[in-house]
Length: 180
Image 1 (cartoon, rainbow, N blue to C red):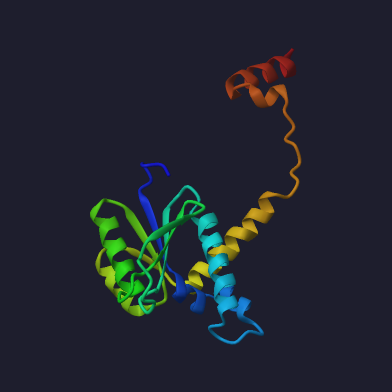
Image 2: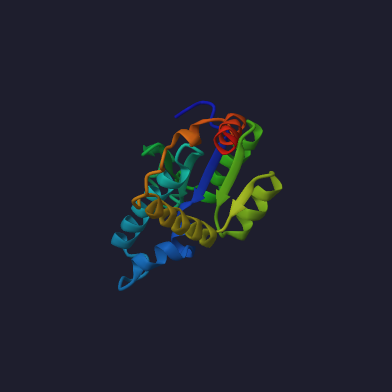
């Protein structure tokens, strides 16, 4: 990861999974909080963040692990994105607030993705940008739509001498042709 990257993306994992329309479709025909649903949705979200962040952001997806006595809060890397489960006894909210604060203190532009009003209010007070879970879903749909459009066959540009000559020289040549 380049050290000159000055933008940070922090995603409130479970909040986005529950509030973003992009991920709700995964849960069709499955009971809420089903283990398989969470695994598939979590994997999809992490992959989406990898693609969305690209080279523009240092990205972290934070999931709430506070109720899990074995959660250490240790960071794992997936495709260049940090994935963190909050440590036992601590909420994802606290981790997100800490990351956002540290990012701003170190001169980064910080974007937090969550629909949690408390987190939004807290990070906004730190001078951090915020995006709702649904806004993120819409941005991802737009991103993937544009990526598909970019892969469509393109007509090769016709390269002529006239296209490579500066306009002043081209005007002189046209004058010679038309007046000669």
